[in-house]
Length: 448
Image (tube, rainbow, N blue to C red):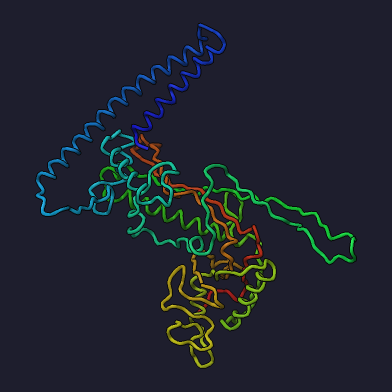
């Protein structure tokens, strides 16, 4: 929404408030306003006139800008000779790595300086995003959509990202309102049985359920920047925003794995009550771990009657498997292209972070560095999760965390606060035993 649109919207709201006061007087068959009503109407009239002046100025500026654009186009067409039946052109996007304008400077100048040119560029950018990114629903969330190049190329602080969130969860769009989601879970089911004799009573059991309540959580971060950094810096504002965005996604992934559901946290996979498999071993090997992986799979099929979809492990645990060799010093995990024989696991080739390209027992292996390495009594263990993606439900606010708010909370110090935030909810509790957790002393830090 442009600045002009916001002013017009406020003007309509003022008129609606004034009409409501006058309609109340008319409905009571009065000809005079009370003292409070008179004061309110006077204030609304004053605000309405101020808004009318702003609308007039902004409309005139927009008209002038449109005429100038038409004139530039006309001059360009005259100066460009036509050499054929048509001319193919490509108009660059408003904000790109090569553009002369800064998205964040324009966002600041539009809000705090009423810069008409900045407002126009932001409005054009929003229209571009609505065309290019219809699938993410840019019209369904407030604020400005950050240009995508800002999230792709910067060398910000290295972060673990969100492999589990991207590869091994069932993703949903968070509803537009409310701070809880409720799912009914049947705890006592109906029954069937063989009828003993004709006309005898058939089996009957009353069903019962409990409510699974999932809290919508807020993940946010902020950074104070000097006005000098925004107005005079080169790329500083983008660099900081990129880091905040990457941090947001990493925090989300960390929460849906490790969160305990308390103090505003998400209740993650680790604390959702999955099948527990203990791997106790003073001298762990890949061969000793292998049966535990099979056990974790059968527990899911035995207790929830579904098929798991992924292994989720820390990169060091996959490296532990890759480093394993048999009695003849031959690797147990090898690329499929090598024609493996009796391999424990196979892969497409080089290992990738996240969806590693390797699989074991038919399940793809996802590596995620948000899995802790300080579990257990010795604070040196990681864990392996066998997960069923359709039973790990993740809801995210459309566009999160691409909603920004600028607050001049430190105006006296020429400080501008940049805030990145978004909402998300997660549960692995619909069928907790659709996931298994392998833990124990056998998963201490491996040596290579």
